[in-house]
Length: 142
Image (cartoon, rainbow, N blue to C red):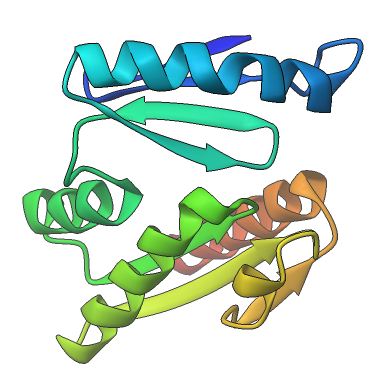
């Protein structure tokens, strides 16, 4: 499954394949070759290979978005190694006085779980957290 991530990246997921790990391994070399021909890098994750320009990652994108919107609070939920850069971005934003909450969805990536402020079991729990926050914000605005 190919996911376009805006105009900056493309992710190739193998989770839906009959043998996800074999598909992941089979795609590594061809995607590395493709990325090299186009001046891109390949960022491997859990059954996903992301092709993107060097110097662009989720952390860079997140910091740019916060700057663009003037956000004063950030909640970032992650579940894969590619989210480490965004975790680092939230940590940097905190040093600039921006409130930040790091959420880990699942515990399959210890590097995220160890740095998270909040551990949730799965994406459904993240969705429920966001729905709860939205309801409370709506109630506060009433």
